[in-house]
Amino acid sequence: MGRIGKAHGINGEVQVSLSTNRLERVAVGAVLFTGQDDPLVVERSRPHQERFIVAFAGVRGRAQAEELRGNELYAEPLDDPDELWIHDLIGAALFEADGTRRGVVEAVLDNPASDLLVLDTGALVPARFVTAVEPGVRVDVDAPDGLFDDAEGSG
Image 1 (cartoon, rainbow, N blue to C red):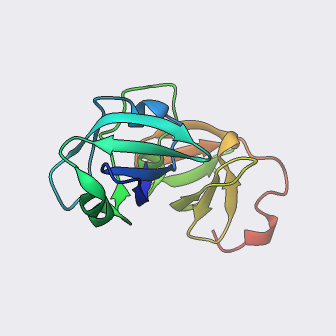
Image 2 (image 1 turned 30 degrees about the vertical axis):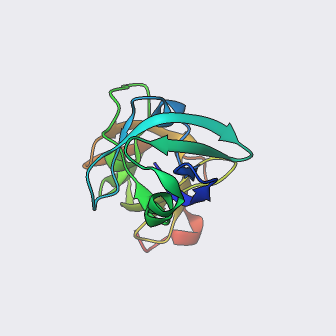
């Protein structure tokens, strides 16, 4: 959901670049994980330019903040049935409305116009065409004609 950047100031704050649009991830009391250490609990945060300045409980001083630099941040999944979650898409087979199987979702690329589903066939499918998801199993899309022309024969 984000990445810890450099220390900010001398009081243990760090810059955090978010890869999520869910700002509650850096709200006071939010619990985040790096995959290495104990959970990090947000004590305070504020927007700063295109990032957030975040203070985590127990992180005091610039030296401790610098030790966190470069860590990817993760969080427990949110329970929001109206959201499309990346972890639900990865590994799922992608099908067009007519039932044609087009490949397996390997990754999701952040793109300003629309996130792109990267298929094992090399095809890129804008997430806005997703109509249904069975987490980790199946993704249905209503794709416009010609979207898969470049990947024809490989899926």
